[in-house]
Image 1 (cartoon, rainbow, N blue to C red):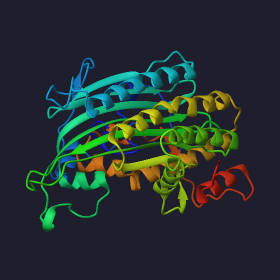
Image 2: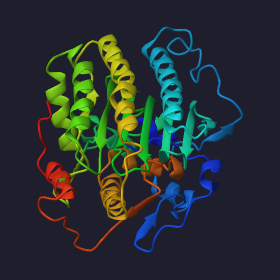
Image 3: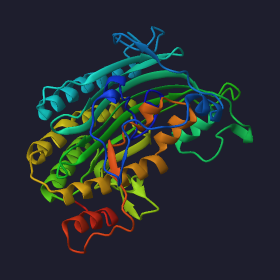
Image 4: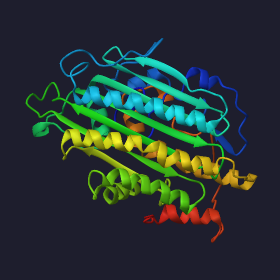
Amino acid sequence: MASSLLTTPSQTLALTPAAARARRSSPAADQVSFSSPRLPSRRALRVRASVAIEKEVPENEAPTTFLREDGSGAGSGSVRERFEGMIRRVQGEICAALEEADGSGKRFVEDVWSRPGGGGGISRVLQDGNVFEKAGVNVSVVYGVMPPDAYRAAKGAAKNGAADGHKAGPVPFFAAGISSVLHPKNPFAPTLHFNYRYFETDAPKDVPGAPRSWWFGGGTDLTPSYLIEEDVKHFHSVQKQACDKFDPSFYPRFKKWCDDYFYIKHRNERRGLGGIFFDDLNNYDQDMLLNFATECAGSVIPAYIPIIERRKDTPFNEEQKAWQQVRRGRYVEFNLVYDRGTTFGLKTGGRIESILVSLPLTARWEYDHKPEEGSEEWKLLDACINPKEWL
C-alpha cells in the first residue's frame, strides 16, 4: 500500500520491480495471471481522483523513522511513534520466520519509498520460493491530506461527513500500518492475511472546529482450500488467546465481524474460514488498543507457522491444485469487488502494484463449478457458506 496501506485489511503490499521480473511459469489456458497486471495508467487514475495522494519516491535505504520531529512524531513518545516502532519490529520478525519456513535460501526483496507530503514505507516480497508462491510483508507510515472521497472509503461512510450538509474539503490525516498476504504453493497449506493499522484525522480545512479523530483497525484471517479442523482450531485458538488478554468479548465480537466482512455477496459465501477483524475502534483507552494491536500482530507467527510446517510437504494431485486455483478466484473476487482498501487505493491514485499485490500469481474460473456433495472440496465450501464456531 504504498498509499493503500492507509486503512484497509487486504491490499497493502508493494510488489518490487525485481520480484515482478522474476521468472515464473506460464499459466494454463483456464487460469489468469496476476503477477504483472495490465491496468489503467497512473495518469488515468489521477484523473479519477479528485485530489490524489502524492506519488512515492524510491529510496536507497530505510530511515530510522518516517516521522518528523514536530512534537507528535519522532522522539515524542506518541502513539504514532510507538506504533511505527511496533510495525517495523514485527515486519522483521515475520520476514525472518517466513524465510526459515520457506527453506529455499531466498530472502525478501526490499523496496523503500517516501512521499513528498510526509512519510514512506518499506515493502518486502518473496516470490517463487520452495513453500511460498508469493509472500509480502509491508509497512507504511504516511501523512498529509486526502480527498473527501478517499476519507469516505477509509471510513466506509456513505455521506460527506461535513457539518450542516456542507461538502467537506481535503482531510488532514496520519496513517500507519503493517499488512501481509501469504500464498503457499501447496493446496493443503492455507493462505494467510493480516493487517494492523492506526489512523488519525484532523478537521477538514473548510470545516473548522470539527473534532480530531483516531482509530485502530485490523485483523488476521485464514483462507484454506481444504478444511482441516486441527489447523483451523489452532488458528482460532491463538486469536482468542490474544483477544482474551484484553476483553473476553473481543474474540466472539471480532470473529463475527470477520465472517461478515469477508462475505462475497454475489457468491453467498465467505472468502475463507475467518479469524478476527475490527475497524474504527476508538471506544477504549488508546494505550490499551495500542497494546491490543501489538499483541495481535505478535500472534501471527504462532498462529500460522505451525500450520505451514505441518502442511507444506503434503502430497497433492492436479485436481487438488485446480481446486486451490478456484478458491483463489474467490479471493480475487472479494478483493476487487468489495474490499474497502482497494477502493481507497484507487480513489487516491495509489500505486497499482501496492494495491493489487494481495492477489495470487494465478487463479482459475470454471463455468458453473460445483463440487460433489460430501467431497472434501464441498466441506470447505459448506464452511464458507455457513460459518462455524471453531472453539
